Length: 65
Image 1 (tube, rainbow, N blue to C red):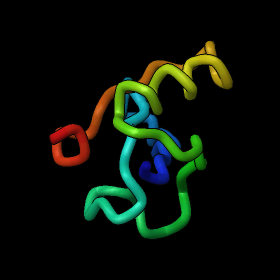
Image 2: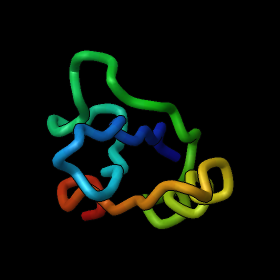
Image 3: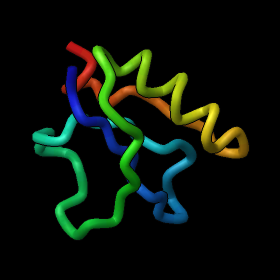
Image 4: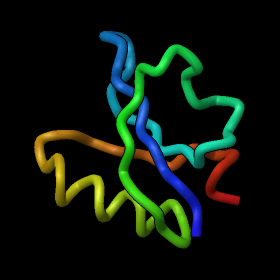
């Protein structure tokens, strides 16, 4: 199980990237939201969509490996 987060969007980004806690692409400025503990990115995205149905999400390529 991993802790997952999604980045809060800048105006240039169409979708929220979902990351594991230790991902180097997770914004270091704290500009992200916690999703929860999940076994993989797909599960984390499903949970994020339940909590935030108005938002679009995508897997971080680094975290989805």
